[in-house]
Amino acid sequence: MAACFLAGCDRSASKPTQATGSSDSESSPVAVTQKIRQKAAVSPIVAAARSQVGKTVAYDPAYVGLAYPGGDVPLEKGVCTDVVIRALLKALSMDLQRLVHEDMKAAFSEYPTIWGLKKPDRNIDHRRAPNLKRYFERQGYSVPVTQKKEDYLPGDLVACTVGRNLSHIMIVSDKKTRHGVPFVIHNIGSGTKEEDRLFDFPMTGHYRIRVEERARTR
Image 1 (tube, rainbow, N blue to C red):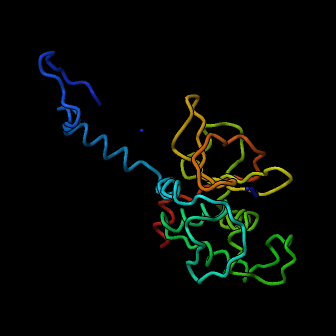
Image 2: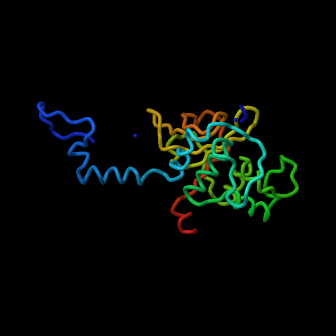
Image 3: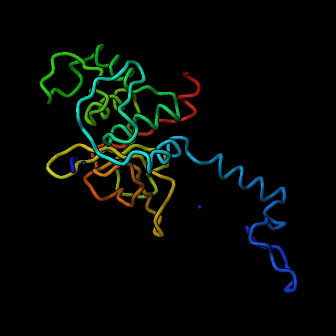
């Protein structure tokens, strides 16, 4: 994909609220509990992906030799898959470089052969969207692809086709439009961004990695 957010306590009119202070209701036990719940409810995958916005500022698909395991290109650049790789590593300790490489070594023939490779390459395999799609499918992470906005939950992964059959992958955000359509976090050409583009492209895959299941297996 080359150039690919409580108010409501009574106040006297003669005693205005200070701009830098907290209202009584904001510091009440109920308000504090609500804020804690809201923060806890944020998907760790979404939080990890959003942390890349403003840091990954370029799209660069160049082949790079990586350390192994846990290798990564410089944070300021990358492709759509790097957003997913970094988010899952930070949120769930899922090292897709290692996981995909090991699965490809065990079942190389089950993966796409569009690059003409005869064996796995741990530097690039996990950075290719078709390979990530196949890995997620093989792990049982697939859920139905639909055109219903409510079917897409924060932290879900969505694969799609952009332009002339280019594979792309995005992370569903917890932020929504006024119509309730989730935003996505992805890098489609100018760095990691959070945008209203969920239904912009033909979808080819929908995956859900349940945080609680990953926690039990680590």
